[in-house]
Each structure stands twice: as structure tokens, then as C-alpha cells.
Image (cartoon, rainbow, N blue to C red):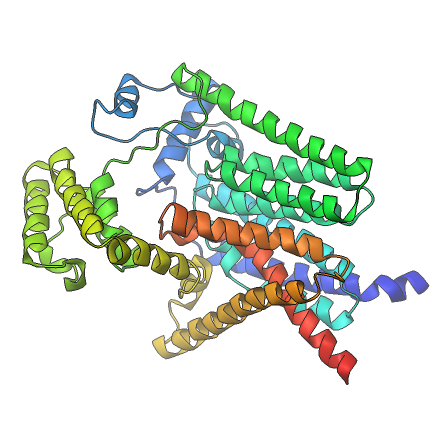
Length: 475
């Protein structure tokens, strides 16, 4: 009876979270489009590679054309992606070549993995927070938010990456302050390390997070276990790196890590990165249409994209070439030349400020999830706006609380709470992911920060609990 009284609220809050996630899952399955149609983007790449893996029981090797592109001797795109997600797709499809039902199977698997991730993070959070109200509040936040499930129904590696990263971060909870640090570091490092078999940029972020965990533990524990923690993290990281290098040797015939990243329209990408736009107005409306050789007129490009008439005329010529002979090296060269000139003339306005804008817009946007959009499609527009507005306000609250958590941790840095070290690790992951995508790569694709959403929910909840706890203690 005593154990039930002590653990009852935690168990009941877990049941509440499971019920809310089950409801989201039912809606997700009911309103999503499960047709086996792969219109473009990255989906055909992963599907085709999974089919090849199923048919030949081996990954395809680099073609002569891909090798020429990597060497800069031909126009096109390189195959720089790691092999992990194609293997996941093949597993979801039962190593069959028939893709009927593939989207459904991948979607269900990715949704359930994300649900498990949220459940694991909630369990860790409630283990550290004694306030019963906090357990239920976190369950409601984790269970109703839509953002972590935005790409669960898409055949791209971002949802799987976010799930494995979240589970890895949950496993690191006891590394800084716990007595079984090595036992927690090994699975945590393995789960985090597996993500750079899905997305290449994780190779930069994962060692940063693992190093932060080791450094934080060394500040509080000068024991042998700290050294073993560092060794465990290093061994696991090197093992995952060796797997990726082995794949590249198999794929290209030469040692390497990820291969050279070459896009089929780098000039167009560089040009849209020199002015303020969004993923929809920059990538979807211009870059991806040019890549798909869809008609694009100069009048469809906003006036703010041009600094003067000369730029407008140059881009107009590029569009004329694309319309007459297709988008290729000549048209893309014009886009690239305009972009380079703009950056040389005004580096702050054309390079720095757009990257700062894109970094902020990765979070400050109205995106929710495809499930919510499909669910609200038949609803009157006014009601849709209220719902979307409500979730945007919730997003702002989550972001504000996460920023506030930094100040809270700094204020009590000399007398940290039991799980402050873990929260610092989560913040390192969130900030590192955001800066890497927005500032480092200059990308504006929202799905690239999906992996930061689960730890951000934890950080927001922790900050809110701290504020509520202080008010209660003050009362």
C-alpha cells in the first residue's frame, strides 16, 4: 500500500500519457494518406534503395555517373547519405520489393517509436520531480503536442532520428549524477551514435553531447567511473564511425565518412539563401520546382528577392534557359553568380542576416503536424485559425520556458538539483542542433530540428515545475 501511495501518481500519469498518445495514434492512422505514392524529394531515394536491398540482399554501389559528379566532372547529385534509414525502410517492408502498404508500415513504426521516446523521457522527468501535479502536467503536454509527430508519416529519416536521439538522451539521465554511469553511458552512446547512420550531421552533434556528459560528470565525480564513462563513450562512437566508414568503402571503393555532398542545383540554393524567405516561399516555391523542372515565371518570385533590375534580368535569363532546354548547369551557374556577387557586396545583409532569420524561423513558425492539418481540413477556416493559433501560443510558451531554464540552471549552478546535469545535456543537444542547422548549414527545412523537440519538451516542463515549485514554497 505504501509503494502504491508513493508511486501511484507517477503510474497514473504514465497511464494518462499512454491514453493521450493512443488517441493521437488513432487519429494519425485514421486521417493520414496511406497511398503508396512517392512524389519527390528524398522519399524515392530511400524507397528505391530499400527495394534494391530487398532484391539483392545488399546495398547498391556507386555508379560511374555518381563518381563523376563527386569528382566535379558531371552535373547531378551525389549519394552522400548514410545507409541506416534505407535499411529501416526495408525492414518495415519485410524485405519485399512490393511497396504497397509501405508508407503505412513505416508511419506506424515511426509513430510508435516516437511515442516510446516521449514515454521514456516522461518517466525520467517524473523520477526527478516529486510534485504530483507536475507528473500530470507533463503527461498532458507530451500527449497533446503535435510537433514530434510531424514527419511520422513521411519516408524520411527525421522521425526515426528524433526517436533514437531522444531515447539516447533519456539513457544518459544518470551519467552525471548516478552511480551506474557506465551502464547508462553505453546504451545512451549507442542510441545517439546510431543516428549518424541516419543523418550525416549527427556525426558532429553526437560527440559534442557525449563530451558534455563526460565533462559534467568529471566536475562532480573524481573517480574511476568517470574514466570508464569516457572510455565507453569513445568506444561506442568509434564503433559507429567504423560502420559508416566500412559502408563508404563498400559503396565507393575508397575510404571516407559520408562522401561529398553535391546537389543538382547548388546555385539556386545559394541564391534563395541570400534573401529573407521561408521553407515554403524559398525551397518549395523556387528551388524544388526548378529541380523538378516545373514551369516557374519571374512574376512568381517576390520583389524582395531582387536588389536591382540587373539581378532581375539575370534570373529571368536563367528561367528562360530552364524553360527552353531544362534546368541544368548553365541556368544554375547564373543563379550561383548572382548569389556570389550579392554576398561579396553585402556579406552582413546577404549572408549573416538571412542565416539568423532562418535559424529563428526553424522554431518560430506555424507548423504543427500533417495529422492535425488533415483532421481540421473539413472544419471552418475560423475554427482552424483558432486551433493553429492556440498551438502557436503553446509553442511560444515551450520556447520561452526552455530559454528560462538556462537562467534557472545558471542561477543555481553552485547548488545544482539532482537532475540539473541531465538538463544541461539536453540543452547542449537543442542549442547544438539549432545552430548546426540554421547557422552552420543555413538550412530552413523545419524537419531538420525535429530531433530537438522531445528534449525541448522536457526542458520546458522542468522550467515550469521549477517556477511552480518556487511559488508553492513561497506561499
